[in-house]
Length: 524
Image (cartoon, rainbow, N blue to C red; front, side, top):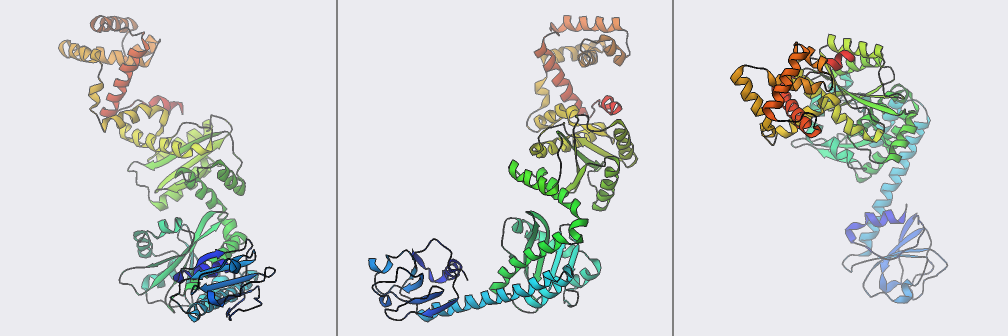
């Protein structure tokens, strides 16, 4: 057992490191140090008093000592490059430290022995359930293994549980809804994601404790292993043994059919990490992509799919995802915060073919679904930001149009600005003076100058299109525009003036809940 590990486990005695060698030292046994002892054996740790130390310690032999400081150390005691020396205060007896070291080494021997049994089970190549069956004998407690979709991959089927939910899990094949809720209430998943060591948890008014450890493959979370404290109380070495066992489970999952069948889940996990902005370093992203054998193209787009109520059920999400993959075969998808997110990655900025667009529109319409589409982007590290764009596009498109459709963020950027402003300001405060003049004139003379101006600005340098939109003759349009210029004294060729007017018109469209995106939908 490594010396540094023994010293860490002796923390209750507060050992102070006085001298240490730079190479790992492995201890096989321990012994009470005799007065002026010599020689010292390299693989033994000695415990005694500083008064027992010889004047000189052999400088050619590795020596490991824990001394109770009954006398100050001398320079000659510690002038040795091959000496590991820790001292503790003169408040304990040597036998207390020796007994603790004995307990530590017994636990280590138990771990080594248990790991040999578990390794033999892994090398037997009899599958995950066989490995779990052997683990039950080793841990002397029930073992559960599930994937990230909460499907139970293997468990202690031969054991009976007083907890009815655990008995039901045998039939369900999934973590029981109550147990899943309890885990979420106790923040089990959050705590596990923040820890590299097994987590112990015990609910109030429950006699049963649990040990949890995440299972990872190539740094990607693929499941969870759990022990139930039913047959015997957990011991300290169970934590380390579970840590090592989780790595064996990872190896078994990687080499068996689970991993092959669920390779698609790896893309889902990766995409979810991109969306949640967990991956900040390009090197880490490159490693994950290499592991997935995912060849990237230059253009990306995120698609957010939801129904009108923004409350797509889990079962429905999976069915929708299946159909989307039929329409866009090379896309990748994930479920994030109960929503279906699709990543499209292709070499051309025209990411969807006309046939795919037509099929997508038909599918969404038939199923009363809407899609928010981000802007096209060119760096996969920007996925999180463009996911938010797709989310906003869907949200605003549904709010403004009151019907299913495909909504592009580029069409709703102004609406998003209006929404953000409306949370802090009265949007009417941004009304240009000319708008008030035209509103007053329209009210007095029952004219339509304000609508005329809005459509005229929507079709720059194309008065024919503007007049067609208003269902008036081109000459009538030009007459009204001249009247607007006369009343407001505005120079409509001035870019800043046009921008202020158009911004206000877009803000008003947001407040009215109407936004003309039919043109984009028809183009799709």
